[in-house]
Length: 470
Image (cartoon, rainbow, N blue to C red; front, side):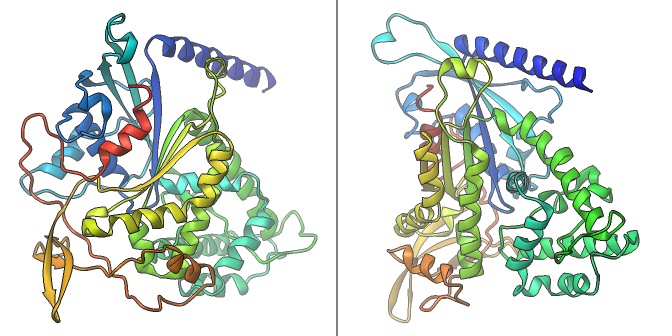
């Protein structure tokens, strides 16, 4: 075991050195894209890639606006054991004759986009074009939140979870079943499985209700781990001096196995190699769900920075494999659900939600930015008259039945603290507004040659994430 560990470590160092040397000649940017359910990860990646390949809608990407990107093309990704992101199928679904949204991210995938770029400035006349590789890594946001479990014991995690969910209606069935059990009793596997299943059902309901603290993430996306002991545990009330044969000790052992055999390999093999990161956030969905869901989202965003290990890396450190995330973009998605006159308010809310996270990252030397965007614009804007007042609305095709409808979600406040303060004190609802949300289907689009799908601020996001290497 010791020899195997040493060999594995040496192999990783050799791989890191090889990657670093090749990166001197052909820079490689590993961009992680994550976000919680329904935040639009798949749509974001598909639109970003399509608009890098056909750059007619990318005026805020400087290298594209200046005409310095000579070519962009897809290549096989370097990681042979990671599934390829199914870009072509997703794009066809989004832009076909009867467009529809692609399926949500359920596992890790990767795609490489290579760009041949001419230098600018003083080097423009001295050097030819060079190739920059963008490796996009797509992974479920639920897995990201699991990284916060690494430094917690089963007792700590249980206490935190039970404290958070005590007043949630979604947790009533699980809590009733848990209170009927005694963690000091001997393990009864059928009862343990029932409790774990009830906890998984609670997590699904909590996610549907707009909550973000739904860990462990593999309970939501179990894949081939479904039914395994590593996913058969749940939080328990504290037990003093539990015996080895007890339910508490069994769940504690499985919790530690989950960290060691599920979470740690993901961090080691994928996440620790990311050097730019996008975190997509359905802020409008959280606002619609209410103050408690918004506060839960704010706390979760702050906690994610402990996993990002932000900070700049010198070229020698990177050559030796010591990567840290250099840039983090926090993006509020579905900006097309609002009239453009409300986009500044949505961006301000996003900045306020990520203030603590951004402060931590900037202190460590990483750049952060918060903005609002729409990866695929599904609406058009119009102003309608209602009760003698003019309302700035958006119009689109409803996802539920395909009808065209105009939609006004409510007026977001100029000061984001109006929402955040109510969220922090645990208010049951918003005092002066009833914020609504509506799900739109993709609009039919006829893409002209040289243009990617219509979007809002994908080019600005690309400039922040890639502008310095292009």
